[in-house]
Length: 209
Image (cartoon, rainbow, N blue to C red; front, side, top):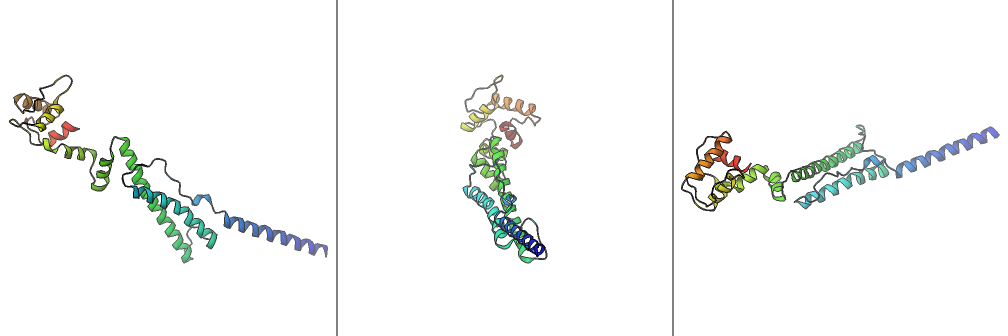
């Protein structure tokens, strides 16, 4: 009789421990569900919607996973091909992580570009039009293209400023004369370009580099 009572008590204790374990397991999902936010993103990204979506998606990853753990006992980290709900839940979870990672990569790249000197406008052109900083700079100085002897005005003055160095300078008078042409030819020769004395595309890129 005593042995039976002991067995009953042991069974009761084991059952109690099992229930508490399952209860604790249910309401204490793995911390690995949380998506770790990057510390290297551009928090001043020009498109605030992208930044907002990144934080929103990253936070929803953990919330979604924990809700499935608590309500359906589904661990989205491990796919169960024999259970449709489990399989679908894991797919959705992985899609959310992929979205967060994609946004994170974009924001990290923006931060990296800014660390190299890009401003907000240049970062925007990089993402929206695929333009590098060199491309943008070329566009900004496009008005200098095709300058040659006889030209006058602000564009020539800018060209003369670009040609001037501390050790070798020419008058900045806005007049493309023989002095400016010869200085340009010297620049072209020093940069491995044909000394035409005119501002062609290769010369302009070398000037603004």
